[in-house]
Image (cartoon, rainbow, N blue to C red; front, side, top):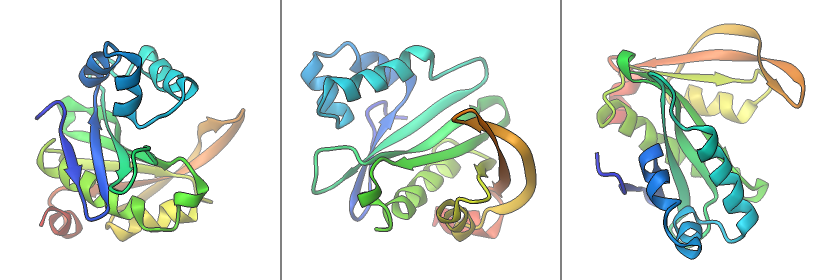
Length: 185
């Protein structure tokens, strides 16, 4: 896998982000760091550096993200990728976020996720991709169902947000399933 790899879709550029790339980027001068990440303030850069310093990789679990850039802009509008990649088991958990409300409902995440799912199933050779979605997150529920993820269960008090325990619906997509095969075409 090319460490500075990018994926292009019709409207987006997805710039690969791994612990190895983070190490290289954070040794660049400040201006180049901000340009690579698509951020334009030292405060935003500090947030990304802090995430890196807290660790993108742990024993048998890696992370692989792609920063999302519109082809007509220089600023990152979000990320999409795998934040829990169990390399020994060929499975990973998908995650994604658009930073600004104004970038939502434009189909960007559907476009990015199609490319990232294909990348996971082909380049990463994943056998299984998982998604955990809050039962109230209608947009994410529509998104994972669109790509053929199968609902597998309801996890009670699965994660904590702002000090409140919340549930998750568990979804899975297997490489040999018809919906995954369509993604890879």
